[in-house]
Image (cartoon, rainbow, N blue to C red; front, side, top):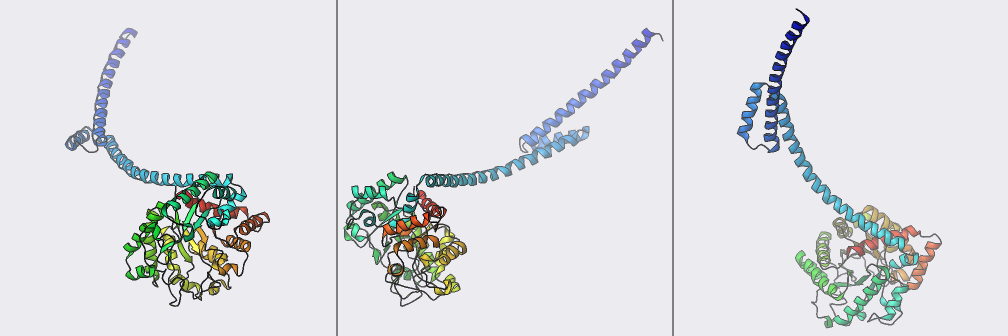
Length: 455
């Protein structure tokens, strides 16, 4: 075969090869197209066209092209199921993230506020006082220039009012509105405007007929009926008229468990002697107050219901051991902590069988920091009972009591006998290192958390 013939023969064989290769390629394209069609039907449309899918799968198996396309179908379906599961997780994660972001933003704002405050402003925030304590007037019934100047100098964290300050609705609204305006202009956030409005014996507003509000009976009677709906209604009733007047805080409900029948201090103020009942009733009253925009507080930790003496007058104590307190007087407080209460008032009750001495609970690190905060888990705002009461003033000066309460773990110092002395005492304690500025800021943070929650 010459070179020319060899070349022609090779071209012929090459042509045949190309023809066969073309047929194979066409078949492969058809098979691939069928596989893609099946994957699209099953994966892309979530199982719709079921009969068509079966027919396509049968055709693929017969043509020997089903293995890869079947794998694609399974992966497509599995991928769709996997996509569905994370969608729910993503929604939950998004909600948690938003909540976390909100908390983080509040924390950032508080940090910024504290950073911009002077030491004097921080210390002022620790005090809740009567309007007379900062203005120097005999009886405050209005808030004008004297109040504005007093708040400019002493931007206290809270102001508490008594019956003598509250004459009628119009006068009270004006006084509270002006005070709130001055305080907010001074510091950029609200001031607590508080009152003791428990109902029954303790009702600064309710017992004054000029206000025309519903008179609430003694909590002992309410507790005897055991109706938690009644307790809730009391909370909303008191909360509504206090909010209407301009208050944002109420030193209620009383959560003392009456364990001593001879107790006359909280005999009619307590819901009763059953710790669980007291916990139920207090929880509902607090809910009612909160729904009306009023910050309530549980009082008087560790419990005034087992005493005979009155801490208003002098030394008062309970003989209970820690275990007995945990099974009785602590029950309503622990329930409240578990439910997220924001404020607890600590009393001047001494618990010698718990602390080993006669130190009032308000000044006891063992009672506040170790038991209330660490053991019971309360990291919110602790306010003292009035530091001008006999149980304190008979043993401590105003400055000593204020510093001791702060060191014990309290955040807000209520009504020292001498505000100026108490205020200066805390400033001096920070300056001489008895109390760190960080400790002051810790309490200011807790106070601001409550205040910003009202906005």
